[in-house]
Length: 129
Image 1 (tube, one colour):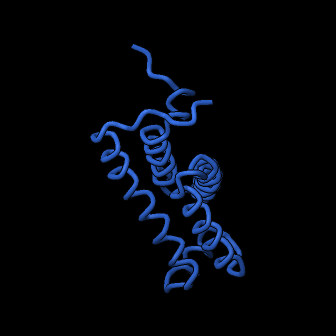
Image 2: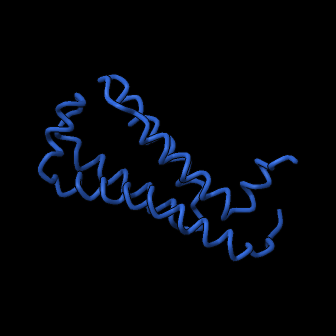
């Protein structure tokens, strides 16, 4: 494996930073609301049929996975963990008949971001001309 990949073009690095802000911001905000058990979180969990005793755990799980994604050396692991987390969120919303587009959209943005900033992912998923 290549130890020193070529540096990213400046435009690609900036695009990766910009695309990282919405999903990471939303995930960190969502995790914080769960951790502090903000007003409305209990209502949301009840509506989704999730146990209130797990609100804090789910918030810390979401926070931890997001931090793992932000660390360059562990970003791929973080993306895989967040994909599982967001897949569960998608299923939860589908199960109760709520709109479910946001979790898959966040997951797609995370992977596009990782594709732009990690040459290993680009090698696995090359665009063909």
